[in-house]
Length: 95
Image (cartoon, rainbow, N blue to C red; front, side):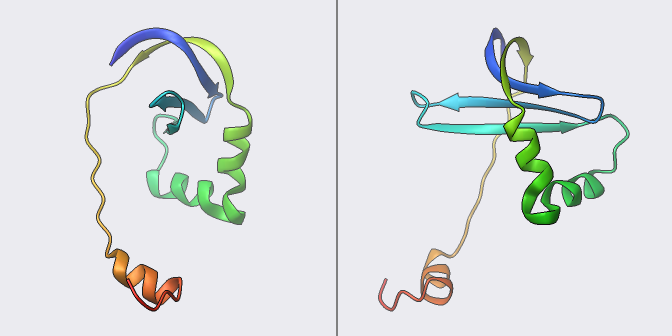
């Protein structure tokens, strides 16, 4: 992706974040990039500590800005046993 447009964006010396909206704004993805040289495991821990306080702070600081976005093409896959999740975690008896 290589485009210039208005996106929800936040950046400081430690992090950059951008929200990408899809399907007529019904869905979105937030991409968060840590500063160069940051240990990724520490960064992930920081985002998830205290019920995600740091993550929520970043999200709350997103503001519309004109951005030149360059993002390589990538694919994300995910799989989960939903039957186990529904029966064990949500206590649904019949799936």
